[in-house]
Amino acid sequence: MLFNGFSASQRAVFRRLTTPHRIQRFLDELAYNKEPGGPTCYSPRRALELGAAHCMEGALLGAAALRMLSHPPLLVDLEAVRDDDHVLAVYRLRGHWGAVAKSNYAGLRSREPVYRTLRELAMSYFEHYFNLRGEKTLRRYSRPVNLKRFDSIRWMTSDEDVWEIPEYLVDCPHTGLLTPAMERNLGRMDARLMAAGQVGTVR
Image (cartoon, rainbow, N blue to C red):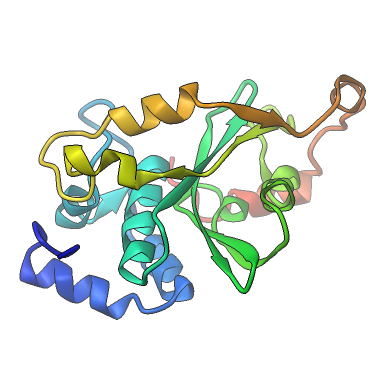
């Protein structure tokens, strides 16, 4: 039933994505969508057709693939200052949280399911989340959003961009990670870690 709307070749892709690790490898191998024609928010089906995805589209594709493995399709939004937000497709195994993600930065991709809370998971991204001025920019995370609420717009297979989802993520409640004193005392990024995070970055 979940495969309705996908082509036979696309269904074959999903059948190969039998673990979160395989989902992440697939996301890593997809071209990064630099939106040459303007901003996009492709459904997983459209991303598969085009062979490209950016952060939001990769999270949607990851959530769809996790759904095929009987995980609920959950997204978490990481909110930053002076930087772009980042979106994760999250899942739980044996009571611990993990994530798959598409990113232009090496340190913002998957996490193993070893985190007891979503806060722990979100904090694992903190030292890798930076802007090009070398500032550490991660500040808040959202509660998990179950994409079943968007089944009525056919978020997995729609021909149209599914902007309703990022708009909802931006507006849903977020929890802060740092106190004001912590923010004031943050140092700059280490140059080596910053360089490592940009390995493979598409300009």
